[in-house]
Image (cartoon, rainbow, N blue to C red; front, side, top):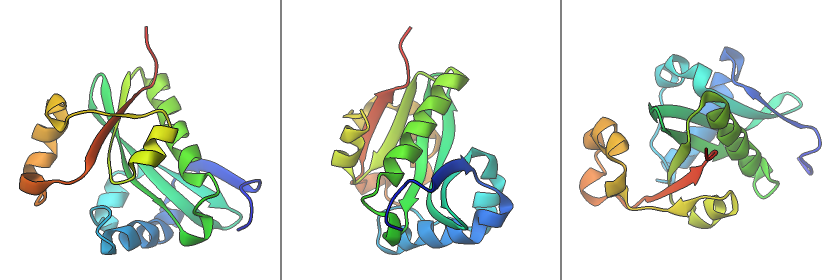
Length: 159
């Protein structure tokens, strides 16, 4: 893949699952995100977008609503062949637009990629300011006592 001109971002379908899992779990093997199972992706399929180049999934990202004013971008992963081509930014901005359309004012990312998310308009916040996330998901995570991810927020819109 040399360009994003043929790239489309669309809702994920069941036909995309194996390619999505391959990309996501490669990041998990590197310790960059939590692994996903086929059933966990299937159960949340309607919340995922994929970046698609011809017949190949080259990026994936999910949106999880945490509260009426807060959603989280999850499982953002880009294939090796598409890194550096703007695929991640297109997925993130598509999910930010989706938040705006849903009336969700803030978008959260827990990440190791601070500079990338800053380029997408996110800023760092203390995890302690996100009780909806901490008590819903983080409380059950094995990384909780020593989580090294950076919490970042972006406003999807202001009133």
